[in-house]
Image (cartoon, helix red, strand yellow):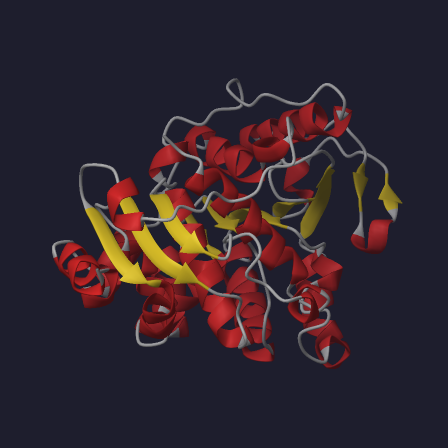
Length: 344
């Protein structure tokens, strides 16, 4: 029986055999919204009527992109209210703060599509990877003259990223570039619980002061109807759909992620319709868990279905990890794998 299962798995391609090579030029060219948001617009955003802030933020971001200013009052750093201004260009960016699944990325992509002039769209990790590939000055030179830089999943997980992103935003903002960003964490709390953020308060404050923070309330749209969990199957190979699919042991994929830079995860899953994962198990190492979160984000962006056995993929984070500084990242990934394992 084991021999037959091994033969079945051998007939499939494997994610662990993929080792994508990505040039800096390809990385720069990839700074566009993911396919699922290729047609995102402010008109197609569907605010939850139970949470008026969703429609309000949509209108504010649309006004920011038009450069006409925003009518709604906005929160300053640490929640202080500021009077509404008539000129959104008084600050160089809008920062969408809210829980996962409230449509922040949709609005960010809508801003990208509505903006005129040169523009870029990427995750925080894609921009930091670009700096790693081109160097800081090379990245500034590449992005200089960009009218709008969209940054999704803004996070500061280490002091180096704090310093680098602060400098990058300042350099570009001083030459007229504007920014739109999303995160699950207000800018004043970035890095909280991950490193000694108080040692870098000046840098965090300087960056936060460039943004108008817009709070989006609401429930995760992927789980509004019912509290669902990720689907597990007994036979992954048999449950995989037709098309471009891979089949691997979960722990083998997690190990492989340690050999591939996260900036290459987009290319790692490119062209796939589904990934099969056998015998998923709870994480014991936080670095492995964070790499998995980064992969889930790329799978979700590309709408690659997940078929898995073992522990449900929304339950692979031990409570000790959920109680730590990366809780919101883990919960976002859990929400996304529920959607991906239930995709048709």
